[in-house]
Image (cartoon, rainbow over all chains, first blue to last red):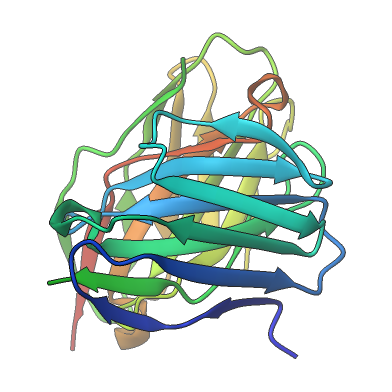
Length: 113
Length: 115
């Protein structure tokens, strides 16, 4: 029943590893996002997809690669993890131009050691 | 470019009283949306309320209302009859159709409700 489902909820990994976070929404939304929330709680957009098409790609290291196999799924793969990648990553979805507000996933707390 | 400013890092309110959380914004887009989200200590982000730039009336959702003053570019959140469960971080955000639906968030205000 979860509207935006994000897995895993917690991820602890060593520097240099590669990891993926998955996101799925069952709301029929056409736009999905990845946001990063740092230790100071600042939220910053990373990527956005509309109907599987990449429409926003902020200044993010190319170690981060999003993939959207269909409009209900948006995954985030991170290569060669660094200490500075430790953060909470939120998936969100919305309809149309974003004027309906986001529905967020529960977040993935990534800790790189 | 869009910018959201929340000048109150932390706020305290007595239970059952009303509280206003400040938010000012800056944008050159004629059409935009303003939002408030709540983030409890459990970490999830919860959408609270939305105000469109062309809406004539202030938005209300239960105990939440948005005091929209377009000329002053402010979108303050008013929570009436505060409850202990309102203790959380609150984020103001805006988006614009010209910006691919991207929302820009403020730095947040931590609200603590005292019993």
